[in-house]
Amino acid sequence: MTDVFSRLDEQHQAAVEAMPPNLFGHDDIDKVRRRFDAMMNAKPSPLPDNVSVVDHGVEGFEGHEMLVRTYARVGREGSSGGLYWIHGGGMILGDVAMSDFGCAQLADKLGIMVASVEYRLAPEYPFPVPLEDCYAGLKWFFDNAEEFGVDTDRIAIGGASAGGGLAAGLALLARDRNEVSPCFQLLTYPMLDDRNDTLSSHEIFDARLWNRQANDVGWNAYLSGAAGTADVSPYAAPARAADLTGLPPAYVTVGELDMFVDEDVTYAQRLLQAGVRTELHVYPGCFHGSDGWVPKAPMSRRWRRDELEALRAVLCEVADHGQPDGAR
Image (cartoon, rainbow, N blue to C red):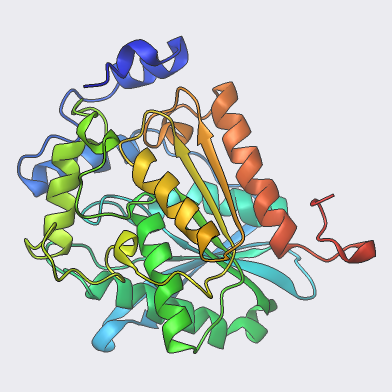
C-alpha cells in the first residue's frame, strides 16, 4: 500500500489535512454527496467579469430536459473553437457548477465557447443514461454551433475523472454513430476501467482521496452492480474497448499518486498503438484532483498551463505557416 501522504510536498499535505477525514468514505451515497457538496460550495471562486454565462434547456436522453451551461467572452466576434466539458464526481457526485470557474477561465483565456453538461447521475440513472445525456448535449452543441459562432471543425470534448471517462466513452460513441466529429479529446485523470484491478488501484485507501473503495461504489452504481463482470460495454468503460482506431487526438493527464495512473497510462499507450495521436503527462507528487485542490502549487500551475496550451493548439485560430496559434 502506498503511503501517499508522506510523498506529498507541504502544500499538498496541507490540502489533504484540511479535507474531511471521510470525504470519500464508501458509506451511504447521500452522505458522500453532502460532504462533497459542502466542500465544493465552501469557497466559490468568482468568475471573470468579462465572461457571459448562459443556461440552456436541452433535450437529453429519452426526452429528459437537462441543463447545458455555456461560457463565452463578452464581445467575442467571428468564429471560434469550442470545448464540450463533462464534470467529474465518480459517476455519483457533482454538477455543472463545480466546473464554473475552470470553464469560464478557459473561455476567457482562449476566446472560445465552452459548453458544460448537467448529465444525470448514478445510481438513480445508471449506464447508458449519463453517457447518452452527454451525447445529446454534444449533438445539440454541434447543431447550434453556427448560431454560437463556433467552428464545428474545432470542437473538442473533455472532462475530469468520471467526466474524463465519459469523454472517452463519448469519443467512441461519436466515432461509431458518425453524426458529430470532435477534433480532440482532453482526458484529465479519466475513470476508465471498472475492473479496478491495476496495481495503482490497490494502493490508494485514504478516505480523504478518491480511493479503491469509493471507485467500487462509483462503478457499481453506474453499472447497476455489474462492475468487473464479463458483459460491460466499452462505451461505459473505455478501457475495455477492443478497437481504438479512428478516434480524435488525445491529451491524457494524471498524477503519479492517483489510483487511476496505471489505467490511464495503459489507455494512452493503446491509443498510440491504434494510430491515434496522443500526448501523455504524469505529474510527480500529485494525487487525484490535486490540480484543483491545490491550485496555487507550482505543479498545479504547470498542469493547468500545459492543458491550456494543448487546447490553444487545436482550438484557436490557425496562424501563419499552417500551425495552430500557440503550438510553435
